[in-house]
Image (cartoon, rainbow, N blue to C red; front, side, top):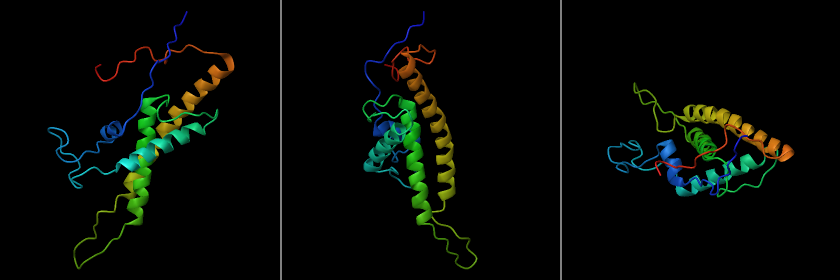
Length: 165
């Protein structure tokens, strides 16, 4: 008989976890880490991280079956990280595109700090594909459990250890 365990405390994704996942550090933030060499600071403001969390939750909630999750009880930590990174990179691609200006001065090739729109967009698309697959699988599982009662699975969380604790 399979054993299905339900977590007693949900994982809550923090801004620091998103920064760690995206490697968004100010110079000197971590010992031996270069951080954001070009920016010398973090790329995303705290308000942007909070907005990304809220939009990730909102995007997940509208997938059928509709749900009412919040950032505090979101069902999967990794899915939240992927969703937030996707949202932030897509938003940054808009910023890069809007501010892109190429100027040529004589024989000097055009260059600027806002020429990475395509790179940000491509990375956000890769994360979007992974997010779509994972979120759809999770919603399908919730839908089956809602229709037939709890279905035990090999994918059920068995241990809730977190980062060495």
